[in-house]
Length: 426
Ligand code: IMP
Image (cartoon, rainbow, N blue to C red):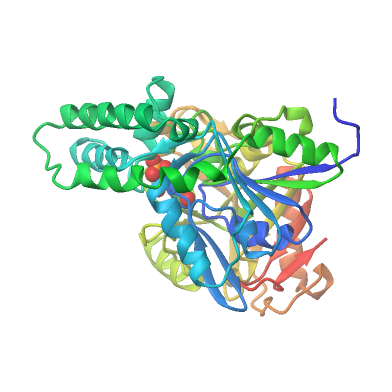
């Protein structure tokens, strides 16, 4: 057992449909930690961080990389797009970030190869009910993992086995869509596999690293990607991603037990957004949708797709509080609401069978529910310079208090802009 109180392990988890601003929150917290580790997902994520040198969008490398000397790990729960990983690695190095000795990749993580992307795109084009994936190959890579035919990072240490398994994977993909153009796919695969000698020296056992860091009194931050309602089990299935995005996924996706986790910080936007298909019960009217999308710059960091926007949904928030065991909330983009005269929060859904206050399992039902809203006054004042709760207008504090009360989770951080210093700690 770990000596109680020795180190500290914090999970940062998306508590809506992704894009909550986890990148910014992780970047702020990274200052105080020794290790930042990603535990699931892959290049579908797009974590945006604004620093003095400009904007960085991180897809697979943990957001902690922008703080010198922090060790950044990619856990076993990730599906690593190895070609894109090195593009990102080189892109950071070209911008002056020193990565030497700072990145570790789990031997147990699965490789996402070009044929996974090809399959993802083929399926999206063929399917009658499209998921609206990011097209990054996430579903097919996790299918190979669950189907026990995946290629793991450990296989880069056995080049012949790696090549044979990759050839078999390519053939399976081609056989699934024999009529689809596969020109260039074999060359792309060769290109991805040629990175193996670069990947080999970065490999590690992330569970062991994190465990010994915690035993040595260090602080570890486990960075989630996507969000609670995109979780394979708890989200709006089938309009979900293929991994466990919730806090439990942090333990299994890094290689430590749940008792190693000390706190779980749920990141929520002060309103709601969703990219990709699937229900969004609190969706705005088209006019408000347009307005908030513009105010909040709500376009996907990975795909550039416009995000659908809506009111804060406490039904989703309560689900997130429960399935993640949230111990605190980080509310982001509060400043985006600065000009709105009135705000709404959904507290329940009216369904043909009556009022529900917990998130229904029937995804089709979610298209037909009518949210029950509480209306709160807007503050119509600039919050972007606030650095403490006392600096906020009373109506903004009342809004945060109501979120806290409805979710029964204390607000620990409030973000009021894209820059690092635009943050309130409570
Ligand atoms: P996939 O993860 O690419 O398979 O996409 C499945 C669903 O998750 C789609 O609705 C995507 O738009 C959504 N999704 C995946 N990654 C992200 C993310 O990082 N932010 C927001 N939505 C995401």
